[in-house]
Image (spheres, helix red, strand yellow):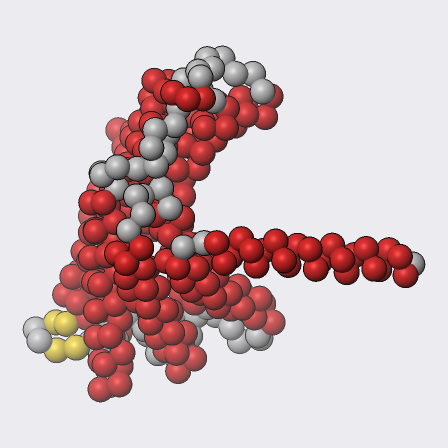
Length: 325
């Protein structure tokens, strides 16, 4: 038993050493974003674990756990992914560090205000009921806009040189474009929400509950959430295609098909929201479009996953032609 315990302790020690070496070799911008992102995700996990343990806990509303959980998990994951994607960009330490410091700070500020307002029992977004609420919402609004501007810079930079395979280059650029759309939809939510909570120059607290709803039931949050996570979905396909070593042309085609399907679903969700309808209230034409986009989104992923698992490479190309720096 002592020997097994000693081996286990030694194994943990060696893994710790390996992690420390890996961490210290990361660029400063990645260490900042990874640390911030994981801390933010931990806040979401903490609220998720606490939710079923609290008797009077609610999911939505001013004291609801939804925002703390969703924003924590989604925001942290987004920050980590953006930093990971920057590793494919040409090294610009000062610029990349400044970008990740800015993105991390704005995300942390937003999460702190969301959690603070939840614990106060009031709405976080669009809340200007008191001077304190107004200050907190103003700070959050500035943070949201600042993050959007930094995301725009990263999107523009993605169309420069990239240290990636041809398929991965396309995956990064297309995913950043869709992610950029998430920032536009986010700003549209802010504009709409302000128009809802202010009626004839008068702030109406009760209207905050419908600040992200367009018309009778249009959910403006859905297209924003979908496009926000394009940076995980599309590059993941690029990574899988790199692993199965498919030739450049079919790999790039699969990326394009996947991205078109993803973008189609985002656009459909946005149009449906501005119709004032829920996503499941599709007419026949929209339903056909939705199923078509879903088909385009899933088929490349299914093909790449099955090929990777089974090892049946249908069209293999030389490795030296797949990587361009």
